[in-house]
Image (tube, rainbow, N blue to C red; front, side):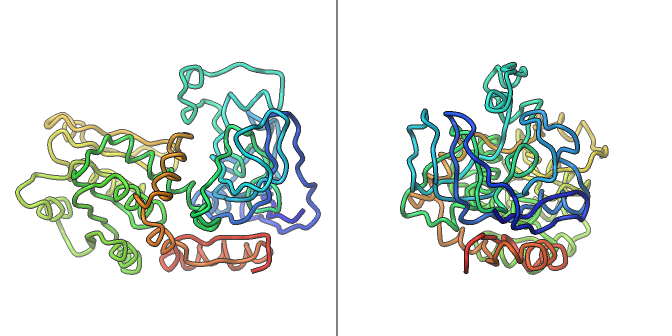
Length: 371
């Protein structure tokens, strides 16, 4: 099959000579890939990795690179294992891309589970990996084989290109769920990149009240404004926190904040711009370095700061339902797609374009089929 194989730092290679993955056991699904989005994690892997891609045996599958990258994908079911009943050949599907202890029986005889998985917190698995980012070949390819428990059918009114965005929307949906945001409450999103904009969509799907996106890049602020939210340019203010609080009128701060930038300044702002009892959610993937904050900024008004890790299968189900019913606007979601390219052009017109012109793009989708 065709695919983009990851060999290591800045070493991504297009090949048409990759062995097509086949079903290995009764609880797997073989999928013909339709569309796969280039994620910020893919870019980090390419520029700074290997980060997730295994140089030695992966904890779940025992496989190692080179593997086809890509974990935000949709497709059509090609073959199913004999125990699979919830999808059939020809169904349009999306894939919840995490892999965890429960996936190990697909690859080996070790059925042991970490503490998180034994409690049902699969997204917090100590062995956590991803299809297309460690465990096995991913969506920048013709064909993928995944565990059936990770495959969800999408309704006919959700096109396959929109389907490829269910994964990043689920990242955002999980973050909003973690914040326990109630209808009508206010929210601050720090960073107007792909995940920040997805958080906006998830907040709108939860019927949030006032939503403000803080973003220094003009093009990204315009993307956010086009989604119907208020935008804020932090470079125009000496006191960003004070200016953000002023946007709330008589209130002292936001009910919830979502840091999608992952730099020290936004982490501090995500806490300081909260009102009493507010909650700050870190959505960004940080480098492995410490950053200072003032513990009393949390303590004085009993604020909370926590993180959001990936998603669960429930998040996928709820995002699909929100798109299906119109609770989340498919028209707005489509605005996030800023490019569609063929798999063979994925390196030059996809990865290179996002690295050189990231402010001008949100989500570039890649397909193995003719466009």
